[in-house]
Length: 128
Image (cartoon, rainbow, N blue to C red; front, side):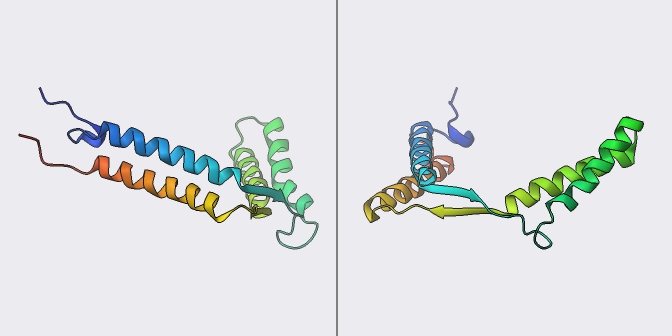
């Protein structure tokens, strides 16, 4: 019986695991250099966060009145989605200063890992 490796191809498990490890280390190091800050809520103009709460609060009110209310569930879901989208839209992301060597190591590990994983999933001719 022939053993199947990564992606159902013969062999490639070692390449896959090595590439996955490189991707994880490179991604971890890259993400350690990123700082995330939140900004002011400027969605639809300044100081509009309170307006984004209206659908959520109305939906919650409908659900307290009738827990099976379709309109209540839709308003609550839409209100929560608006709030999450607003938070994400107002994030500010910076790459902290680092040396060129560290940046090349991070990106090299990430790119090399992606290459090894892709290579491990490519079908190879069976060995004789």
